Length: 510
Image (tube, rainbow, N blue to C red; front, side, top):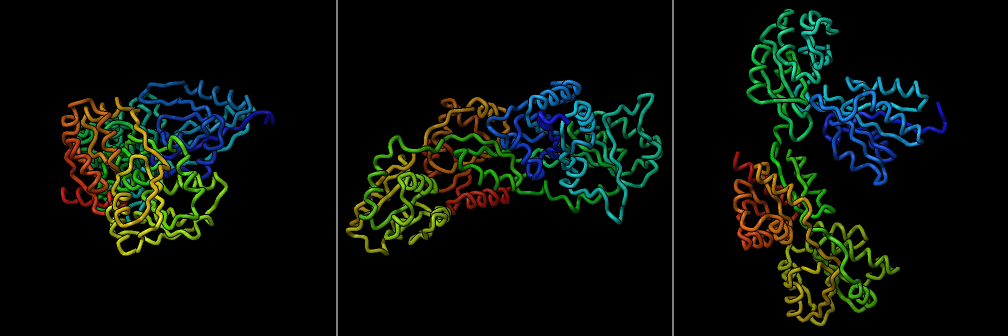
């Protein structure tokens, strides 16, 4: 091996669900100088790459090859010879019909160091997500993986159809949808019973997964009727009958639903994870961006005078985040708050506050400004000084009502939300194509900014048939004032509460 060369990692990217990447594979992506990826590699894996990494697409889709295999081989070798660490991402496992062996042979010939990082092959994962165990002691203990890409009608097939048809084990064909009629024909011609169960799993392990079942006698007709296309796995064998009992992935409450998430990208991960775990296909269209205020002068003055405050009231996770970032930037730490009592608008905000070593003295029963005011009625705050670090655009309820109770309230901007107009065309196109089932709103600003993305006067038409879900009554009121009909309003004004309300709503519909 040439010690001055880089190194190539041939990585199995898994079957589609990005959570099925191996720990080693993920680390290789993060540390790579160059990422060369295929059509079937999950796009979210690319987000794990270094911002300085070169990202190169070399996918093959339905005969449309961005680069030929020979050119891909030359590309990864060239990058490695330049001293780069190359992550070669291949869908599934690199050595299961992935031509990883051919790429490794080129690297050996060129004297380039490499490692193989196995991946979860779709041949196993897609049936598993469809509720089909490929082996089961009551059905079969043998499994055969076959390429479906080969034309079964060609003169010199490398597939022993007589042997496959005579066996009692499970057959799995990869990349075989186009050749399904010929595969069925060859199996039946060589003695496989026409009543043998068959399943096709398209886009296995992803939120786009679709499964069609039948027998060798009926499957072609059913797949044609369902308009199923590649990528898909074909499973032939008695284990297919277990699907009715064991299917789990497609039973989730939001499976098959496309949900638009309008929350700021920095905060959307929790909501996206919740919804994805429920089976939803989440499309992120953040309508707001959270950032620091135009000036820190007001907060700096408050921090300089912390000793004069009796209370600090936090009304959001962002308020906690930006307050403490500035506190630490000024060379202070939590000891500066040792004499101060704190209030948090809800459990999530209180949880973030605890990360800085502070327990909230007040957490209201419901998570809105009015409830914070009610909670303070049990406290004697006349003459107290209260610091209220929050968004520039926040509602005036808290400072007004606490002042009426005799407190001196200093409202300080620690962050602001800014409108995001990116990708409006893509959002409008999705709505026009009726590809959206549900839109989530997590604040009044997400509603107003979402409306700003839509052409004037077209919201009613574009949102026809789309379910709108709001995190709470204030957000719902804003939506109604803008002419929207909100179908779901969370009773608990948190992300888990919003997801629970969505599940309950869809449960009533089913």
